[in-house]
Amino acid sequence: MRTMPIIDIKKLSKTYRVYQKKEGLLASLRGLVHRQYRTIHAVSEIDLTVEQGEFVAFLGPNGAGKTTTLKMLSGVINPSSGQCTVMGFVPWKRENAFRRRMALVMGQKNQLWWDLPAQESFRLHQHIYGIEKGRFEQTKSELADMLTVTELMGQPVRELSLGERMKMELIAALLHSPSVLFLDEPTIGLDVVAQHNIQNFLRHYQQDRKITIILTSHYMKDIAALCRRVVIIAGGTIHYDGSLRGIIDRFGSEKIITLTLAKTESLAGLEKVGREVSIEIPKIKFRLPKDEVAKTLAQVFSTKHVEDIVVEDPPLEEVIARVFFEAEQSMNGGNSSAAGNPLEISRR
Image (cartoon, rainbow, N blue to C red; front, side, top):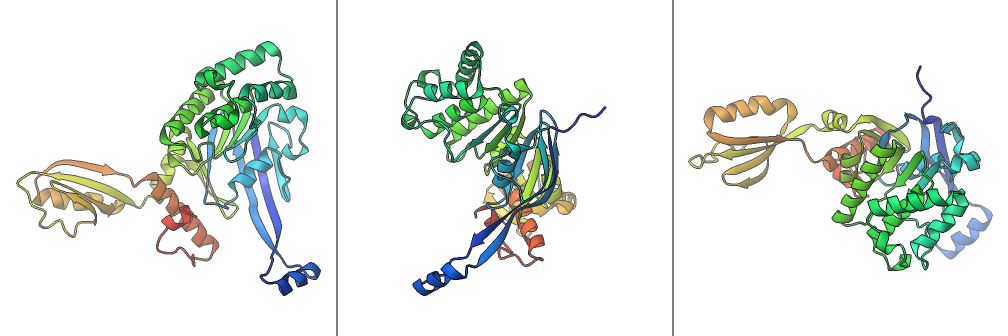
């Protein structure tokens, strides 16, 4: 018998009315009497189910609705319409039983007291969640060991580095052993080493505890390292729900070819093969449409002595940017302001 999804979303929407303030004193005075508003559809009738133990990535350009969705799932804000249950609870009812079983970590928000050592904030969490002392001490020690911050817990939070603070934020979120964890940009602003450490911890913890994690991130290395399932949201609607490999197969229209020619070979005749990326003799790198790879390489092999060949997919960031670009075009009827350069969307 099929079990109930741990997260079940049906036609969930969130709209905002935003005051349109005009420039100038006279316009401001008029606005006091006749205000003009614009309706923003942050999330538009999304449907989604997540099973117990999944590690799901939410991807999308800035303003796509990712954080708004996480806030509704965690009960921080109410939806405008639609239905949702998380572990059988309606999140925006904010029942204590629900809040004791979930956690939300936002990379740009702090839940720790800035001027106090992290361990003092942890004790506050112990009392808020009613964690038995023995279990609290054991969980705190295990998490601190896993994140290698045991020596830092007595240090004021304001004196910690960004990466160290994020580790403390994760400990605070996991002290009560939640069944569902929402992570909004947990590695934002971190250096490569700190990102890698956070990734390793999350991978190990999720596999060991079998908890459900929803992650938003603009760092594709986070997604590639942690998530098998990816949900792409743009303009408040879901445009893709599937595997990471499926994104590359569906939206990656090219292959990157690197040829290593024999030392006696020249580049003559290769000038028009594909779209050139770089030339570092005896290597040449170029791009080809996927459906032309076999035919083109056969022609090259018939005329050139090739010592080595590497066929790669385009960078994941590039493929994801293309998905964002196509999603924006479909919402704008094919007239996107970023037409011709899909990478512009990912930089907004």
